[in-house]
Length: 313
Image (tube, rainbow, N blue to C red):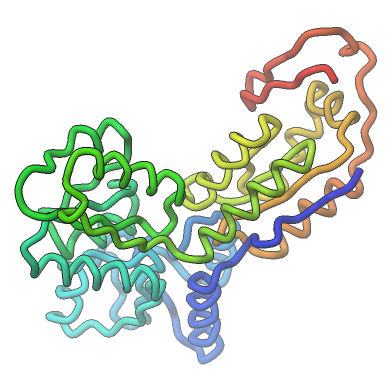
């Protein structure tokens, strides 16, 4: 069995930058609190917690004696203003590309244009970004795009930095159908690392028998990688961490199908630690497959716990 890792996988610049800042503060003896989850990865959050670094949900939980960290997704403008008004010192680890999106929205908000943000309205990045233009419209489906009233002033479209680039293009195309092109201004704010990872997983999923996507279940960019891989290869699973694979190892259906695999591809979200990727790689390199003879019958089975379908070769 050959194991391949996508050319672009794991920590992106923004995540690595944030963790480096925290490491430096920690080494200098700072006690640290983070406003919200720094990133959407359980392994990283567990490691931070083990070092006494806690995530807080509101300023009421803030300990003035500790150093406050702003999460990589950013925080709403009113929350940041509140920090400044109260004289609370903080270290901002918002991803520079997320900051760029916020500034773009703020600039557009001062112009005679309607703002459309393509992304998940419940994601922290979009909640923070929309605070710079409260009247902006967030859309996240073809139905919402088709239902958007394009009559009136010009429309300016931006994207969540972790959005599927093909999905963004589709949303823009729908809006173009509904309005004059000269009234539509498109700002591609998807981060380059996101695009590179998406292209890499497309190539990977097309050449292997099975794909493993590693990353937080609530990670936007990881979910996008999973969906892209699944379109290219139906034999795709999404796990949060390497230890999740042992649940599959004990599944007779999975073991049976895995016995026929010639190649496995691994990719990971932008907040997945490199050591988790290595552990997944090691798992498959060492995985001893002994198919259950009793399972040697035709048809397919769907595991009730994983929801994954295993077919006969």
